[in-house]
Image (tube, rainbow, N blue to C red):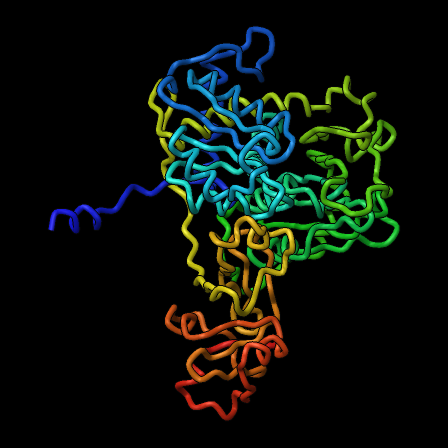
Length: 491
């Protein structure tokens, strides 16, 4: 009886930061207040944006940095942050010298490291790897960048820099230049900007526009409104639209409801409004098969345009030629200051996740937002798989530990599946009944009303896959009500 009682006792929930959307707006404000307190408490006597001293509030804690990809700023700023808190670090900075070279899975590695440390920061080349690590870790996991998915702590540094320079985050106009498709930093950044009511001006390199799933989320979940730039306007030919977001900040929602009425004249005014910040990013050559591509270069001549006269010029670094070094002495150049903020921001995040107590510190007040999406878990060895070939679910070392899992998002004809790990979406799929061994290509939209309906079905990418798995076709019109309750959609 005693063992049963102990087994039923719920353990405290462990908080992780895998996506910027794991943090509510209130959480972000709490992180900023805590970072500001550290800057005030532990100042550098020469530079107001640097931490110059240490505290001992983290003296009983250890941070493990688990990096499967190269890193300078992210790894060293996390390690500096932990040392500044008075804690210790252990690090695995080269997969070639770790057990990953022997074929050890990420799931096993995380469970082992959790015995040695109190918090983990991870960087990995696979999209969704941080989410998998969080599933297996009993201690907090922070995403230090996973494939081309997200880099939430970089976005915290970026937002903090914007707030320091503009005294606000609401209703800014931010231009983003470069590789918007492969940059995980950009993906986290645009989600956060939209939540704070920004106008986002994409300036992608040719063929490097925002991924379709990021664009769709901006428009449908973050209520962004697309405004086309008339031909011949704008100072960069790659600008063809703005994302105009609501003037009031909001937490992201799963369903945006009715379309927002916009005033076309107001939207067009955004074209001429001065830019508050220009965010430049490098060509993510490690994520592209073709290494030699034309890429925009931001120089002083470009920044002489009147709309950039007061713009903070930001860059997550490293830069590799896309931002002229001659601009470094300009008062608008804030990228090295932006990098310095990585220490107080990461000190704040570590402190809050570990619940450290000390002067000017406090816990997260509101907690993380909880999704209301229904979860579909694909049976092993059959049916639908994530469409992103770089997703962690396709890693040969992780197949024993990971399932193809999807959140069901949208409604009606816009119902989609979003991978739990990498957040890529699948719009077209075929629904099959486990019980009756049929599939249908014309049944009603996938029902989300109960998890029971999702457990009774298997999803396939197409009819060919369904037939190969032994299912037969059956038209929805001929299905009895009980069969239709399994629900589904096919295209």
